[in-house]
View 1 (cartoon, rainbow, N blue to C red):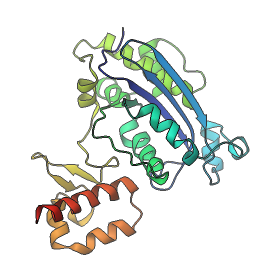
View 2: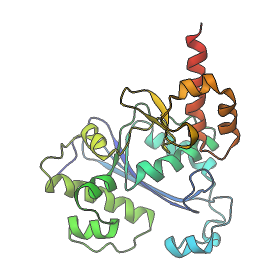
View 3: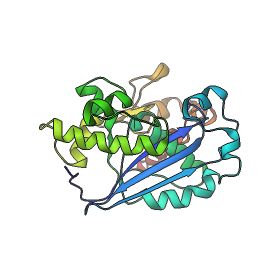
View 4: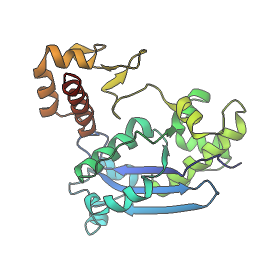
Length: 257
């Protein structure tokens, strides 16, 4: 089984300092780039997160503060990583809810205008959960018949995710072998931002998904309560969420003229 690709797709996995998208940092990133002709390119980087890795997190992935102390920062690696993924679609395991939002934050902190308008995303975990309801290690055993040795190593998890997707295509004939179709199937909600604070309603318009304005049109809230924009910009929201909100505000201003 080979993926039917019209452009490259990058399977990737992050190991991080924690699970808060707006605060935590990457300590390891692995990317497996698969080309339409079947060629593959794999890269793994350890990253100095410029903050202390909590002991509880070290217990999960085994990457210590000492191990990354002399590694490059994400800002130093960002141009190389961006060049590897900018012409590709993205895929991962729980990537839509965590890896992509956190990667976007790191890119924006590194002053790279990361945008996914021309990228499709495939979340292999969502396909798995819709079909079988299991974890990555169980999924690897279920679909590939193998034990996942070295789980929570970014490179091991990335390779396993790629193999699982190929096995899912073999197992489920109703899954169309195209990134566009897989992206649509593995998307839980249509988000305007990566973290899901701003989503699209049935009419394709941006609405807030949280707080006192949950379900309300973003454009109407910004018009009727201008201070809400300032509150979000100064609060602890992901940088990409703030970027999307600014784009909507600028679009409103442009439409007035």
